[in-house]
Image (cartoon, rainbow, N blue to C red):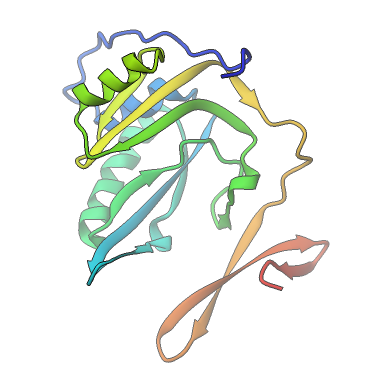
Length: 198
C-alpha cells in the first residue's frame, strides 16, 4: 500500500441510531457532505445456472452525502426497491456526473476509501482475515447477507489528477425490437453527439 494512502483510525459510534437509517450512518461515516454518491437499484435472478441482472435506470440517483438528505432519500429508495424487487447498490467512489448523465469508471477523480467484498463468510471470519493479513481494523463493516463488505476511510482523499478533465457521458434510450428498450451512450463535442459504440 502506498504511503500516501493512509487509513483513518476507527472511532466507535456513540450516537443513538434508532431513528437513523443504517445506510445513512455508513455513508456519512465514509464520505464528507461535498461528495456526490451514485445509487443504483439492480434486480438479480438465476436462470438455469446463469446469474442475470437488470439495472432499474428509472430509479438511478445521485445524492450528496448529507445526513438529512440521505435520511429522506434512502427511505424512498427502500420503498422503490421493494416495489421493483431490486437490490440497492451505491458507488464506493464519489461521482462527478449528475442526474441524466451516465457515468463510467474513468470519470472517477477521487478515492475516499478502500473496500473489500468477501463472499461466503461472516463478520468474525472476515475480521480474522484482516488480522492475519496485518491490515488496519476497518472503518465500517457491513453484513451483506451473503458475505461481508469492509471499508477503510483514507486520512486524505487520493485524487486522480493526471487523467485530464472528465467528459460527462449522456444516455439516449432507443427502441429495439417490439418492446425492448436499449440505450446508447454518447459524449458531446460542441453540439455534436459522438456515440461510444462507434
